[in-house]
Each structure stands twice: as C-alpha cells, then as structure tokens.
Amino acid sequence: MAIDGGFQLNALDPRSLSDLQRLSREQPDSPETLRAAAKQFEALFLQMALKAMRQATPQNGLFDNEHTRTYQSLLDQQLALQLAHSRNNGMSDVLFRQLGGLNGKSGGSAIDALETGGSASGGTGLDGLDLAVAAQTAKAAASLERQGLLPATETAGDDPVGALIAQLQAARGSARAAVGGTSAVAASAAVEEGGGTAPSGKEAFVREIWPHAQAVSRETGIPARFIVAHAALETGWGEKILHHADGRSSYNLFNIKAGSAWQGETVSRTVKEYAGGTSYSEQARFRSYGSYTEAFRDYARLLSDSPRYAGVLGQTDAAGFARGLQQAGYATDPRYAAKLAGVIGGSTLKSALAA
Image (tube, rainbow, N blue to C red; front, side, top):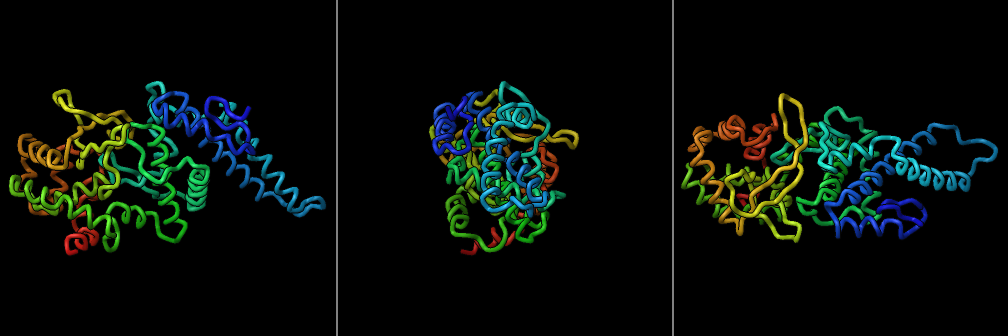
C-alpha cells in the first residue's frame, strides 16, 4: 500500500502521488487533502536535511562508492517520508494550521518567510535569508514541479492547497534570483516593480484596462496611470486575479474585500495581514464582478463615497496617492505605500504605456 490519506509512503512507487493529485482536484478544502500536502512538503525538507548531513560526512571509506551512495540516497528518501508520516516533527501540523485546517491559525510559518509581496496582504521578502536556504527551497519547489504538484497555471484563490503551491512557486522564483547573485532586497524590488522593460503580457494587461482607468480618472481626478499601477500591484500585472473554484474570474483587480453589506458573489482565500508590526493569517472574502467595467465602477465608488479616502481623490502626486491609500487603511502591509509608489514610477509601467 503506497498511499495513506493521499500521502506518499513508498518513495519508489511511481503511482504514489496520484491520490494526492486526485484529492487536490476533487476535495481542495478537505482537511485530509491539506494534511497530505503539508506532510509531503515536510518530507521534502527532511530529505534536504538528510542530504546535507550526508554531504557533511566523510565519504571516502573503503566501502564507499557510487552504488552505496545511490542506495543511501534511496534509503534517506524513504526515511524522510516515514518521519513526516510519524507527525513527531511538528512542521506538517504548522503548515496544516497555516492553510486554515480545522479553522486553525498561525502567526507565521516557514512559508511566510519566503513570500515576496506584490498583493494587498503584502510579503516579507527574502531579507536576511541565507542563500543556502534559498537554494534548497528552490530545489524543493522544483521537485514538487517534477512530481506534478506544481501546475503551470495559477490555482483558484479559494483552494488552500493551491495557495501552498502558489507560495512555493513564488519562493522558487525568489530563491533563483538570490542564488543567481541578485541581492535579497533587489530581488524583492524587482518583484514589486516588475523590473526592466514590460513583457508583452504586461503590455496587454495595461492596454486592456487603460480605458477603464481613464473613466475612473475622469470621475475621481486620480491620474489613470496611478490606477493602472494600483491594479498591477494588487494582481501581479493581471496574473494573480482571484478566481472561483470553477475557474471563473472574479475580475477583482483591486482585491476589494466583501463586507456585510456586499450582496454580490464572493471569492475566499487565506491572506496575510499586519497588526502592531506582526503578521498573521486569516480567511477573507473578496468581491466578485461580472466584468472589468463593474470592477472599476465599484473601485471609483469606493474611493468617491467613503470619507476616509477623501485625501486620495484628486491626488496627482504618486507618493501622496500611495501614502493616502495606506493611511486610509486600504492595506495593512507597512510597506504598501512604498511598493505602490515604486510601481507608479517604475520602468515597467512606463514601457507598457509607451508601447
């Protein structure tokens, strides 16, 4: 028997991950699916730890050769799986709670330390993270991808297993930048601003929403490029727009949350917020629209009708606009204003607008 509740028990069984893949498709919100994904991730880290210990041990003995090292590696893979399944280490339980398992919460986790920002809930970047750890994280994410657990497309926002996968993908990209010689701060800035010239996908995103931004600009007095930059920051240049479980887009370009007065459809996902300088995770509901037109109209209505955004209306200074949104409580990330100002003044937006 290779599978126990979706978790791989036999490192050599090529079918051992099929149950986990099936569970993630059919029961994305099931506690068993979350536990299986968390255990699998813990097993990968344990494998890396064992590998590092082996490398630190002299291997030039009389009986050491390529064959013994191969079999030792296979044994370590199996040992890591058994250790993760034993639940004596605690890491999988922390991941399970971080993903909302059994309504659990955690003030932070290993994954939190690897997020790079670029959303309403913000991120911590790779500041202070040892490059060796970043390299190992990249290997772990690559291993998940080879095993079919990292899909090529973004997973729906209300799929907690998908949220873990998305965070792993972000960590992998950040780790690659760090290992390649880019400093942690520069890598984080590149993610937030978009870096360099605008790829065709970003240009297409700007072209698609530009007329809507101009309409909001006429209504609010806010420059259209500020509005485009705001949507770009919130959605990663349109690549991380929240989706329903059935694949439908929410068209929520500004990650506006759904309060008690909201009567329309919603999309739920786990987000990171800040309070008193400390981050925490919570489940949040976001508004869903039928089109970008509806989304921009609601954005204009939010800024125009809410007294707390009075200082934002008519603001033509990039730093003032970004600071006004943060002071009004649009996001809790303490670096939100700096991130938004960076996108507004960045070369990516300038290049996309000039295309």
